[in-house]
Image (cartoon, rainbow, N blue to C red; front, side, top):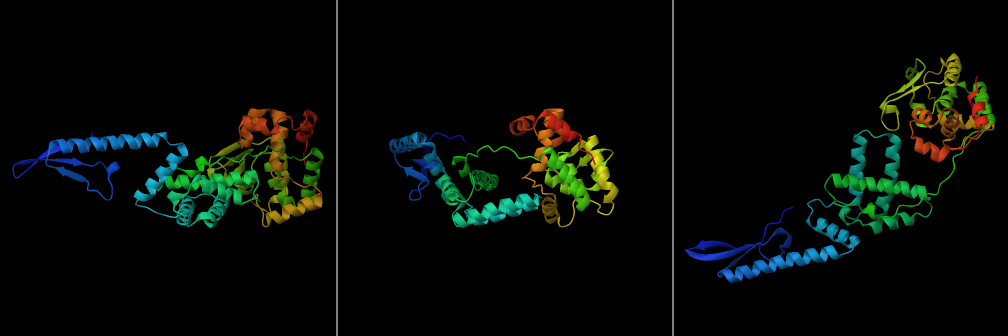
Length: 353
């Protein structure tokens, strides 16, 4: 913002010259008038010079402060001068309602809501402008039961709240930017071996063939678990998986050419699946848990998709696997490189109904 020089201005009162100095907004005190009047020009000039000196002195002192102290000063200034003074609990409620109205997915809203409730319990009565990085640090540290990844996820959701407040012009600074991000240790992915895949599919065909399409789409098609469950029979046409943005994680259309292996397993499902209709089935979690118990094969978290990425990276390379899995080659190499041998990958490719 441009700052005009502070200079006296002449005005006449009953033909007698007077001088006035308008005090800039950034130097106005609640105990002093906005304009000072003087009978003598020299007094007006001296006062204008004192205001200019004060402005330079304050700016110099502010710039010499450490960054964290500057942030505190700015937050205090915004809190005292803002027309909106809203606490964290109210801001969290409005933010969650806005994201719900925007059409965010249920699972995302549930996780976001959990973080907001935890923040509200910790410092919900505090003004949104008064929240500091130290408050966020204390909140994260108080939850000793949270693993580093959980803390990182909660920090990201908290940052989303403050970023939303900035867009609403309730804040000028996101306090989460001053928080040290938790370090998440790398953990290798867990996949199913070829014998485990065979046993799981064999049991599925015998005990609960309605689940066959879900297992096939994730393990041989590379879909995410949620994407596979949202998939409809109408999305599986002309040997292609065609999903609209409403069904995908990134709200973008996915169109994937089915492999011969996937087509064979979906054909086996459709031969018996006319009774079941869409890919998702009622009581899905219970039936999948029962399938694991009966087959004796425990599916690790995201183990079906991890298996697809690991075996196909060895079979068809990073670029083709990344397109099928809707991922990046960099992420594939980071998590799945050298996870399986070439011999195991060939055995995986030969699994058929």
